[in-house]
Length: 153
Ligand code: MG
Image (cartoon, rainbow, N blue to C red; front, side, top):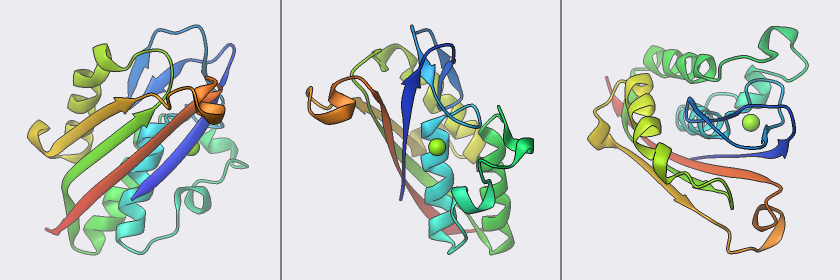
């Protein structure tokens, strides 16, 4: 399982699951701040007992500034493959008040399927609000949760 959260920030693009979403604000972060791909990366890394995304890709490393977070997922997949595992399926939940993720869910699902090298029927993308509760409920940021099932190659 993987968890990630990023704050909204002005002057940044909002990118979730590799999909650029039109919005008044984007997410603050060292890379492209794609909380979905960060959660997926950590889910894969955790399942194979590897270091987490923060250890492998520190935000003090200039090489990762503005990085496409697909790079992190691909690296995690490579580490998994070296241990004899690939992703069997993946489920993601995004929690944010706005914008609505609905119109982008199919694109995100297709992106994840391609990235994880599984069929789209092995990827779930769900979205919910936090019902106005807490920081996410006040629209201060986004939370992403991911679960992956790893299977032997
Ligand atoms: Mg992150």
